[in-house]
Picture 1 (cartoon, rainbow, N blue to C red):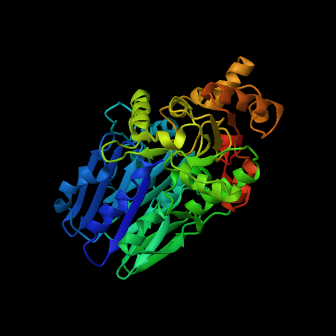
Picture 2: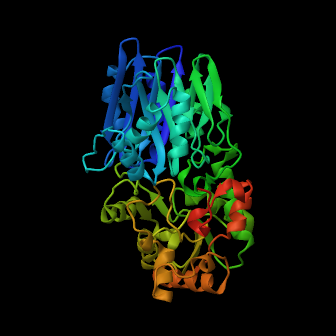
Picture 3: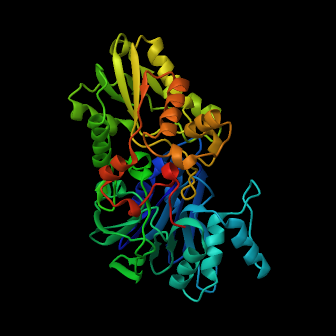
Length: 467
């Protein structure tokens, strides 16, 4: 997915920029970057973070940065920030999202005799395409709107100028941007968890398509938000950090409610409730409290030397990292009927290994309760599982086995408790060797979040969305 952080301060902003960006490390997989501007010009640094943490890569760079304005990014796609020279002036830019019509936008620009650089893999840089769209206009505000209207998919962005920072949320608000304030400084962030330890308080949640211009003295709206919103529901289920809030709704609060909903729908006899760490923990606590069943931790997570399991781009390495990080505790497993809450089941490969370990350590029964419905459709908006084929999704594998086709009756399979849905879930259960498997109902997930369904993007579960 990726995350953004920008700050404008009356004092040196480098430390706040560094830590504010670092608080988005759970969102990105490939590159991290920082840029600042002062009276001498722009400074920038970009590092590969596929095998190392953001902090370890950028600490040595901090003395090279100075100034009271800056932007940072954790990116799961291209190298950012970019520094652009244009008729509008020099500016830095960072983006988050997914541009589905990238080639089309590039072809149109090439016909106007423009040119682009390529990434090391020979692909176009999405952030550069966005910058080009902005530079075609007569002002930053007009250029940002021009980009948002042209892009199919989603794109939230921060623009760093010599005068301040433009913060622009994507057209349908699929990714969040929140403004924070403290004495002498304002910040824009994808995650509100970046604010408390830096002394910021939440000041404003940007609406879908809204543009604001931020200085050390405040922020000014440059484009009003649109009426339609489809914020990604998966932010609360999986992506978001527990301390973060979107649309004023806290992530951990929603996960507890998701777990509670799972518990209300369940009557299986078990000894303990557990969560697949980390994002499954909040769901499991909610389930345990709802059913008044003891919560335990039969797996502990070893993090000092192992990176996030979704960081490596090679699937075999991801699977190895996921396995090596989770250490089983035999005394809490042997002879027990354990129910696990998990944020979701994407491919199921890592989960299958974890389940086998539980049985190897003597569990008598292992039950699984994912906090969201089965993933059936590819994400078109946030780069979710871009390195994995849609056909590798656990739901699609089961459908292929049942129908001898990859895309038949998807709408029927998406309906909870339908005949086809029950068959799909049972096929996944058997592959994972679970005692029982029961997914969250979509209506219960929507209720747990607390927003109307038409304000949420639920595309990966039911195929619905605005474009």
